[in-house]
Image (cartoon, rainbow, N blue to C red; front, top):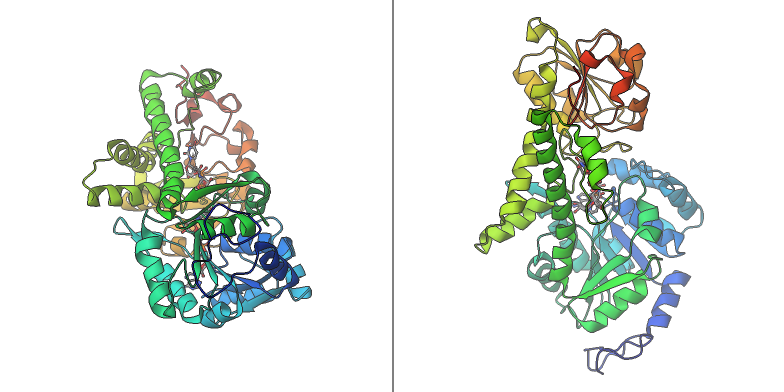
Length: 467
Ligand SMILES: NC(=O)c1ccc[n+]([C@@H]2O[C@H](COP(=O)([O-])OP(=O)(O)OC[C@H]3O[C@@H](n4cnc5c(N)ncnc54)[C@H](O)[C@@H]3O)[C@@H](O)[C@H]2O)c1
Ligand SMILES: CC(=O)N[C@@H]1[C@@H](OP(=O)(O)OP(=O)(O)OC[C@H]2O[C@@H](n3ccc(=O)[nH]c3=O)[C@H](O)[C@@H]2O)O[C@H](CO)[C@@H](O)[C@@H]1O
């Protein structure tokens, strides 16, 4: 059969003697619970994905390596503060639609569609594929004929084809696009509204290397993406697409940081200039800030740079943007420390507002606040408070003997020598002169209204110094 035929019928079985099920039968079997989806990794991405499938009526197996995550999941809970995830897990357990496995091979044997949602972080400027390798091997070991494997983390272009498919083929003894099917579906969720983003926020991206798997992906993922799907034939292109989104953001933030630093030097109000500039339809200047954190934006450009170096391409803008953004914690702290009252720096009491990498989330991965803490510790400042309304405890902070993590904002801003706002949590909008008294504040996110503070006690990135 040729590709591109009736969407309800498999148009490219590739398998000679084996007849594939019509897509409608396949979907019916997922909906009836005969076919099961397994989600490997119940973190920021996996937990909302599992929830989206559960919400579509499908039976889901959650798999994770962490005993704590599994224990929580069995109670219908997650450590991910995403709206609707806990409720969906709890309903799923009550309806016997949500199953939790600690055996990844058994989960693969039991499920038809296996979704890889474990993290790909960075080690020595290269993608760290250890977790992906581990689950891929387990999935391959339990793989059955006509099963479907779908890959979700953001990864360097070529990873699925060159790294994951060979593991699946070797461990299963079967061939991709013939005996089993591989889909790449990058996640585009914004933490804090993940289920909404999957279901209604953006079109989903589905890709595969053959037409049959791509049509299959469209049919399957149509169950959860209500805003439509963008189909890409060629997984490598889809892997690149996701990284391009991240590079675009990183470069635009770097541009904002560069212009804000110029504005600081010229004593120009960057924020007013930005607002006016963005009133023109083609202009989308981003926000400057104390740093670019999170498990995505600082990492994806590195994947691009690594692959560029291997292919002897000099991605100068991507590289420069990283350098500019990496320098922002140091630049901001230098300006903030200029506000310290004259006294021995080591004896100063400094408060950092925000540990999360951005406002509205409790995720602290690669937060610029860690860079600030490292520098304050190097300067031997002994009394440092970090406040965050959403982060209740943090293992990295425990390593700093000079740093206390607190959730009480009044305590954090009382009787201090300097306050540095590092995260744009909405909770900080209430700060003003009567709350912080005579303590100088450096606004590393341009969040606060300078008019709410005494002129000499407020400085901020891109904010002019008032005479
Ligand atoms: N966080 C986001 O907003 C976001 C958005 C889009 C894409 N992504 C991509 O998704 C990937 C996953 O990110 P995340 O934020 O969900 O990570 P996470 O750390 O929040 O969750 C990962 C989960 O996988 C589990 N895990 C790790 N190794 C495992 C293994 N070998 N077997 C089984 N379980 C294992 C962990 O215990 C954890 O529960 C990222 O690397 C990124 O490429 C993330
Ligand atoms: C391409 C894109 O948009 N991707 C989003 C991004 O989401 P994110 O959760 O990482 O959040 P961001 O808002 O990008 O922030 C990252 C860091 O940059 C700082 N920042 C931000 C905007 C700005 O103008 N100036 C800044 O300084 C901010 O404080 C924070 O530290 O990656 C997810 C995973 O791939 C995507 O799913 C999601 O779509």
